[in-house]
Length: 338
Image 1 (tube, rainbow, N blue to C red):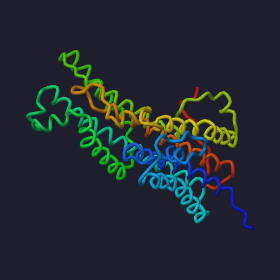
Image 2 (cartoon, rainbow, N blue to C red):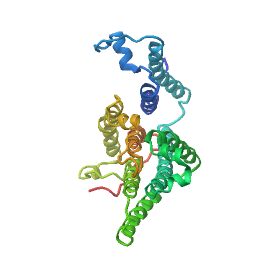
Image 3 (cartoon, rainbow, N blue to C red):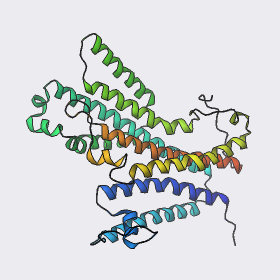
Image 4 (cartoon, rainbow, N blue to C red):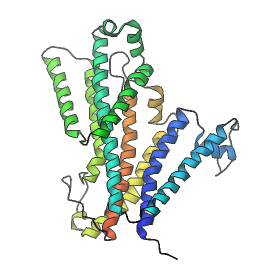
């Protein structure tokens, strides 16, 4: 019997981990937006895994939809296994670079989305505050824009889609530009407040909106660049393999589990941290501030998924060092060490 290389097992496990995070998010959408039952409800209906039986059994096509969701998970793992088996010549480093590129695309797209939403929502809020919105767009449309559900579905979501299109055709992450825009927006608040005695709620909302995006979106990029702060009393004295072991163990025992806890706690039910604002299009100051609080809850989703995929890439690149794989290299020392 042919010996199966260790890299095959590592690649299947790592790529499945990254892919299942995306499937989990997709299933969450099917459950809470389209009314699919989900695995918990399906297994409770079947009285599996010691779950409390449902008060009312699933009927109609709901059991079928539930089994389709189960199939999504197993078919994802099967597809990954087939891909890895047919591409055994690929290295861990190559797969790591693919995951890096995926995270880069997600972050680029999210950056463009928050940039577009911030500018457009600020313009709408400014016109509303100054009493000009009706003259510009008409009475009926102005009333619609005052409802967060309408603005989210018809303004924000199309802008998010445009952001993902732009993200596909661009290659820069834009963190420097976003940081510059935050400084300009904050400077504008200072100038208008102290010189013109003018300040509105949407101005502060815009700064918080962009700052939250900058902090959460840049986290995965900072991980791959070794920029996160850590206590280096021991780490700096490790050999190349010692650092690789430290990074592999840290990813497996801390990084990946924490990301999964973050996602499951945020997406487990309708009232959870991420789902609740997204489902209700929650806003803070209806009529005068930006209608973006629910989108900021979505930032947490982007953060969880991007960090999970990046930790998976981090695991692969360091595992490549441990097995002396061609193309593997030591991660550079990061400036955030203390």
